[in-house]
Amino acid sequence: MSSKVRSAVKALIPTALFRRIEPYGHLVESMLWATYYGFPARKLHVIGVTGTNGKTTTSYMIHNMLVEAGYKSSLMTTVANGVGTDIQPQVAHMTTVSSRLLQQRLKQFTQQGAEWLVLETTSHSLAQYRVWGVPYEAAVITNITHEHLDYHGTFENYKAAKRKLFTLAGKHGMKLGVVNADDPESRDFADETEHRISYGIKDGDARATDVKLRPDGSSYTAQVDGASYDISCNIPGEFNVYNSLAAVSLGYKLGLEKAAIENGIASLAGVEGRMDTIDEGQAFSVIIDFAHTPDSFERLLSDLRKSTKGKLVVMFGSAGRRDEAKRWTQGEIAGKYADELVLTEEDDRDIDGNLILSQIAEGAERSGKIKDKDMFLVLDRSEAIQFAISRVSDKADAVVLLGKGHEKTIERADGEHPWDEAGEVRKAIKG
Figure 1 (cartoon, rainbow, N blue to C red):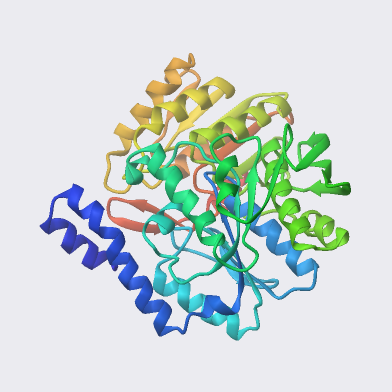
Figure 2 (cartoon, helix red, strand yellow; figure 1 turned 60 degrees about the vertical axis):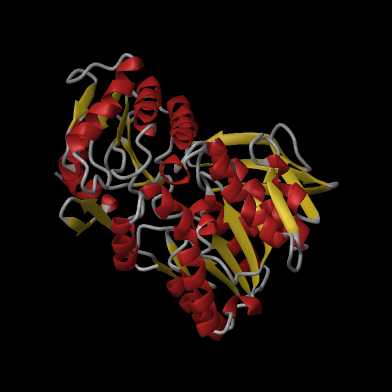
């Protein structure tokens, strides 16, 4: 339902009742738009990718493999959408867009000759029936950790929403499920599909062996049913070993050639806002990433701590009108790994930004951080970036900016403002 209709209805009835009936409003809307556009997804082989972290990168990798294999693949993610190599950035702050825009884009994709669709799919879109009318044939899950409890209420509700993707995929076409065997919360999802494959470093049908992590990526051998793939990933972090292995596992089950799988991963230079390295000739390293959950903080910062020989400065905030409980945890995790923290705004919306920063700071203090010594509160994000950059100078140092990534706007109390994280970083480096 539109934001105006949603706000009007919400104002008239109790919050608990609104949350119960809201999904059905979305369902009616989704049914209408799917019908209006002629159910375009029925002309596509649809692969859904879900999970708490890694959805966008995994979706890109799968799309790249399909393109390398010669298929006319389309892609829709948090970052961008399009067909083949014609991928356009997305400005909206949502992963799976409104049902109207979703169906409109699918119609455009089919008119451009697309045969496949890799669709990053969120728990919100599944719970709200925004993807009604999309006949998923394969479902991929990266992992499940605590997130979006402000909307779902409980972790079990959140997990149940994710499971819906596999239930849907179990009814159409390939009926294929791809699950992370090393993630206890999601590995049983494959029970919903007729065909399945699991992946992991410790366990799984597809295993990553001889893993070598580098500051600029990783390499490993993927072993599955006697087949062997030499994988080179240009996006750093052990978590991206898992993301790429999920793609490899799907590619194997789809019967893609070895070269298409290997080249599909290797040819992906990066994804905007996902472990982006900014190089303006400065001595130190600067990395931008969209990480905004406790689990993504843990995975990313633990890897960066190992690879950063000098000072590690981490800058981040926590969004207003979103899961408030994670703020303390974000602060504690970042404080554990960083030498210095710079706390700042991240889509505060109409919530007091200083309150958000104080909540994050409480968590960071549990890790021993002290305000104005190795933890600094700088509410304006542009000023925070300049301050974070000023805290490093040596070639062994690194600054990591989390939470905004690819996003082109920042949301404040008076609405959305244009935003370019990479551009702000480059200005700060140049002085």
